[in-house]
Length: 115
Image (cartoon, rainbow, N blue to C red; front, side):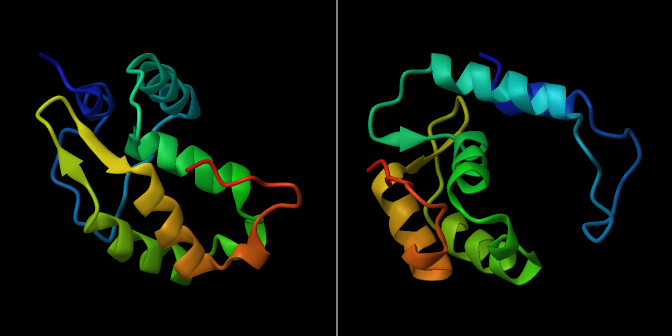
């Protein structure tokens, strides 16, 4: 079975890239991952790309700077579970982490946290 991430890796550069030099995935490919993820019909879990979409949709952009993203990355990395078909996070733990790192006051007006 292919993982959702195999689609991403098909766009990766062939040569070794050091961690300090990230590569970019075209936006259209990220949207495909979102569509694939939504088709999984996960109940209390979300995929990493769905987590990213939630961050972009629900957090005011001025609060998504490097320091916040690094802290979220450290916090959320501990929550990732891999079942073999790809990675997922528990949605309640995801939002608890977001609230802890970003704070509820920094969410977009009218945002309801879906837990």
